[in-house]
Length: 126
Image (cartoon, rainbow, N blue to C red; front, side):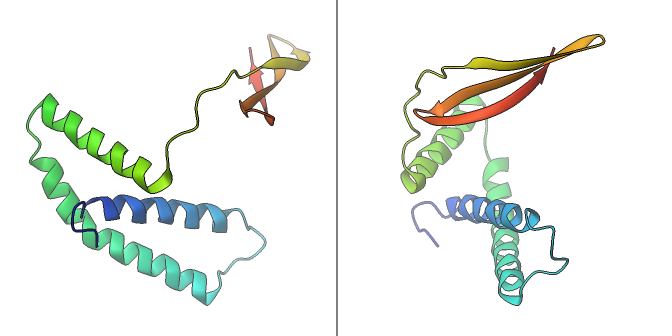
């Protein structure tokens, strides 16, 4: 456990748990997970639940807007330290690549770049 930021370990565990759930939710072809995946999930849950009371107690001690802002800033700082800085914002270069007209609404097919040369597609109903 991190001695300087003991509560941040819980955040890391929660993020790992979300990744674990997302990876296994994507595989709908199998009704049961492998033993190692189940062990990982159980281990992460156990650690997360063990750390939750300390996090909740620390959160309950916050008194006012300034304390809450420091709480948020500390967590953002730790997250960035562990994962690196967020990429710089770049132009989206969004464009409509198709339209479907329907009764009472239309669907627009959109393409944009969330990072340079990394295209993302989306649809929107208007």
